Amino acid sequence: RGTPNAVLHIDDVHKSFAGLHALSDVDLEVRQGETHAIIGPNGAGKSTLLNVCVGRLKPDRGAVVFDGTVLTGKSPHEINQLGVARVFQTPEVFPDLTARENVMVSALSKRDGHFRLNPFSNFSREKEIRDEADSVLESVGLHAHFDVAASSMSRGDKRRLELAMGLIQHPKLLLLDEPTAGMARHDTNATIDLLKKIKEAGLTKVIIEHDMHVVFSLADRISVLAGGRIIAQGTPEEIKNNPKVKEAYLGD
Ligand code: ADP
Ligand code: MG
Image (cartoon, rainbow, N blue to C red; front, side, top):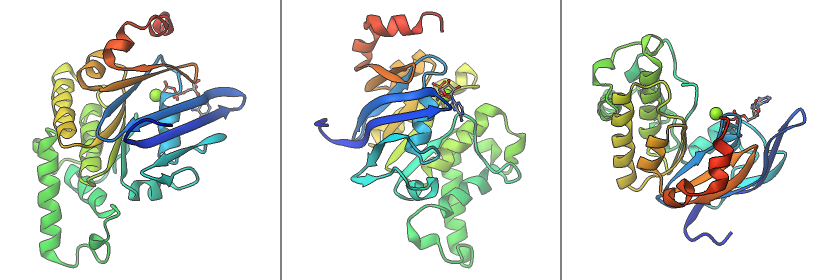
């Protein structure tokens, strides 16, 4: 509604679970190229909102519109094909595949039709995808893990793997649910640096994050969810000084 350059519109979304209002009256707009953080206490509805955006949950009311297309009612796969990639709170990778294979599979499932038919029938194409997978894995700091099965990687490394799986799809919008949870400080800082680089490249991101150091390092704007409602929205500076936000975090 009137936000300049908004690329993602979340319009009046409601979602209940057996009488529990996980999301009520949620309106949110994400601008082209920005990093928009969603913060809020545990149980605020952050993951539910992300799951509504990616098609895993149907809202009871309201709609999500991305790049002029109504996402509500589309499958997660269809939404992914429209250019929306995501990193979930619980990493979702193929446990029996290596890191490289996971990233290659993700590249092949992307929308962009030209890898679709008999993707590995052409050796040079397989090599091309493998080379790109390796360079994306390097960029997320997993150069030592190309041939390691995902199942034997740490939780923090699985998150970085999932990030690599998102990046190789060259998404228009990247949704991240607590991407640094379970990471050591050193890896968290490396992830912040990587996400900053991605931002310079112009990719629009929505990041759900508990770690305020990460939020204030990355966000252009912040929306605060509490009890399923947006209680504040603004720049990091505005959010830091908002008394409603301080109140929502008491007792968290
Ligand atoms: P956050 O990510 O902000 O911690 P969630 O979106 O995971 O919060 O959860 C919001 C509320 O909805 C919580 O009270 C949670 O218990 C509830 N909830 C989330 N998913 C489900 C579900 N699939 N079934 C029932 N309740 C759920
Ligand atoms: Mg969550």
